[in-house]
Amino acid sequence: MLYPIKFSPILKERIWGGTRLKNDLGKKYPQGVEKCGESWELSGVEGNVSVVSNGYLSGNTLEELIEVYMGDLVGEKVYNDFGHEFPLLIKLIDTSDFLSLQVHPDDEMAKRLHHAYGKSEFWYVLDGEPDSTIITGFTEELTKEQFQDIVKSGDIAKFLKHELAHCDNFYYIPSGQVHALGKGIMLVEIQQTSDITYRIYDWDRVDDKGVGRELHLDLAADAINFEAKPFPSQNLPIELNQIQSLGSYPYFSTNRLVIDKVVERDFFKIDSFRIYICIEGEVDLNYFNGEDVTMIKGELVLIPASIS
Image 1 (cartoon, helix red, strand yellow):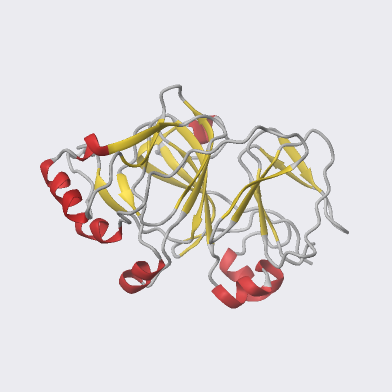
Image 2: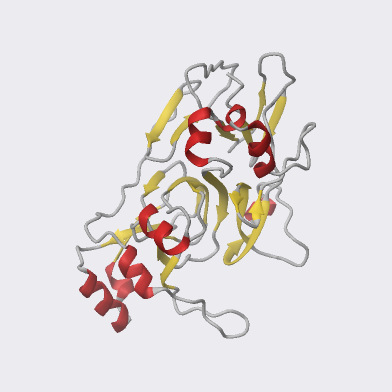
């Protein structure tokens, strides 16, 4: 019988990473690593597949679970559409500096060039400094040719729209949208299973050997949706013990649940897995004929489709 499943996080060192994943969320950094930018909480990305950390399935990979349990784990429709590939990648992110200005390909471009999925994503801000910002697009409409000229001139930073990143803000960033996270932000990222990023500008920084990271200007120019407007910052007042929709998007739906008492949910009509991420405090999950599963701040649990 399947049960709510936890996984061991996969920590990623990043040039722009920080220490809050360790200090605030209790993540264990790899030996010798001082700054991590990402904690992959649930991943089916090749070479970075999550491993179960609780119950009798401990030690099994997510890929192995799908091979054995198929639709019982992910839902019949999801299994028919994606087979043994898990469709989402869930991360916790901490920034001590700006990420590169970047864009991700859509499904068609990613399949054609990389035999992979595109990358649309969702951010939910957990914490930010008073002056933390997110780049949400260009300040004015540009053509592909104008963009290429501006990049060559070195003036791209003058054309970027910044929005303050407040706690509990959330954003949907479709593929083809230029974006970047600023410094001092911790957030949850929900995205398609893809690790394809085209860097446009990396703030002229170099590593400890004086080497800058690779840019992908031609690919980025082909991937950008130049008709897209800057993506909006969204926020909803918190309603205790209510399921608040944060949006239904092409690849996933997101909800927020802030509780101070027992709340019951049923999923009889939902043919899909569900994912819970605890972003504050502690919570016990109880399911029919099963033992409680406790989640603490920063933990993720996968609810199999067969648990309704």
